Image (cartoon, rainbow, N blue to C red; front, side, top):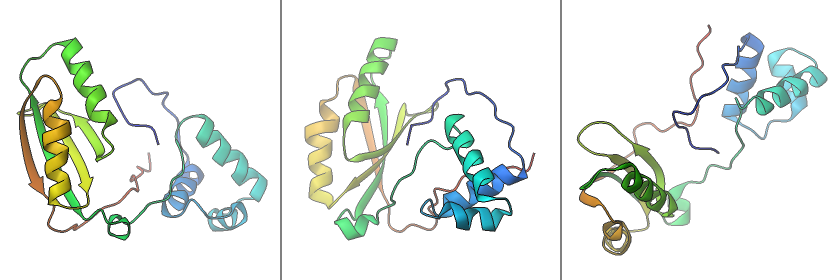
Length: 166
């Protein structure tokens, strides 16, 4: 999957069939073309053509397997707020590259407000989190403040993007 940013996107006009295709593929990308076409009510060749068009236009950016973090012993999630101590375009780009390179960082958002970045960090235990902060995150130049909150439980998590009907 590609990260989202403020880059310019070509606006694609989605009709009701496109929205049905996207909704079904967001539920399960392993669905066969025959089953997908049956669910949305058009022929398999037309379905395949529409899916390929959605892919080539960048509406569908990829397909992934979603893994349960606990199944792979990654049970500690942290939301980490990071503030820079010296702002410049060069410093900002260096920090962005460093944060994006850490395997523990599942998501990284450059934000407006009190902090410069918000990270979703996934590790196996508190000791691994401590190592992440002390040996990786705190060594990134221009980081002035790190504030962490730990996830106690997940109330909602989805990868499905809601689609407007307009």
